[in-house]
Structures are given as structure tokens and as C-alpha cells.
Image (cartoon, rainbow, N blue to C red):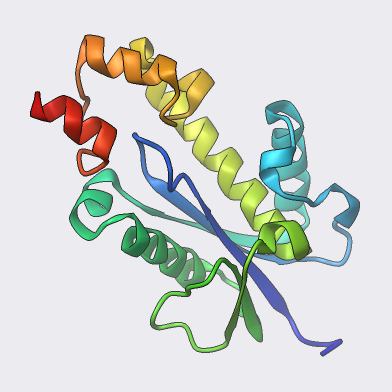
Length: 189
């Protein structure tokens, strides 16, 4: 086991009302500071950006995504697996085994282990979670420049009361997930 190469895989943005779901597949190099690696949700936005930069400089990683249209067409579960599959495919260095956060893996993956709450237990999954979250948050901030009324620089597309009020007041954009109940309900009125 000692010489085996592990890749952590995690996705972010499943619960959002807007924007893509993003996954990261990552293999850590020996010089990464593992003390920095923990569940991305427990790290402040500013610190996450700094830690993600450190991780990216000290790893092989790839990002995969599934679009809003794919989420609405295939459902979020399948779109999440699709984004993971894309991240895994793009990873330049190949591991012996993929460690995946959660209970499911992309169908085409052979050597893997799924780990419930893996982002809290396994350093390479924590790293994948951090890099994916920073990537998605920065993407949503950029997207928010086109749609400033929705405050995606603050809520990153999640269904906060502020975001829901904005949807009710200003309507649904092309980057909202129309299959999601809160958005669907507003469209149905």
C-alpha cells in the first residue's frame, strides 16, 4: 500500500439552485502541507483560496464539470457522476486507486473505493473538495457579474433566502437549474 498512488475525487455544488456541478480529481505530491487539508466547508473563503493555491502547486489535478442543462436533463446525481468522470479522465498522472467522497462512483471507473464523509477523513479527498469548491465559487462570482441582482458573490448559487427573493423578484436566468423544486415552483406560477 505504501507505494500506491491515490487520487482523491470530490464534487461541489450539488445543492445549488444555479450554476454547474464541479468535480476535482487530485493526486498529492509529497511536499503538500497535509495539516491544511480538511473539509472545505469548515474553511473560510479567503483561507480556502490560499490553501487551494498551495494544493494546486503541489499536486496533479483536473477539474470536471456538468452544466446546468446536463443537471436538468440527467438529474443532479447523474450529472455529479458525469463531472467526476470528466475530472478523472483529464487527470494526467494515473493513480492505482481513486478514493471518492460519498457512496457512488462513475460507472466506467474500475479501481476505486467510495468513502462516506471522505472529505472529512481522507487528505486527498479534502484537497479535491477544496480545489473544486474554490474553482466553483470563483466561477459563480464571475457569473454573478452578469447577473448582479442574485448576489452570487455571496451565496454562490445556493438557495439562501436572499437568492430565493431575487429569483421571485427578477425571474429565472439561463443558469438556474429549472428542475430544482424552488426554481421549478417559481416557473410554474
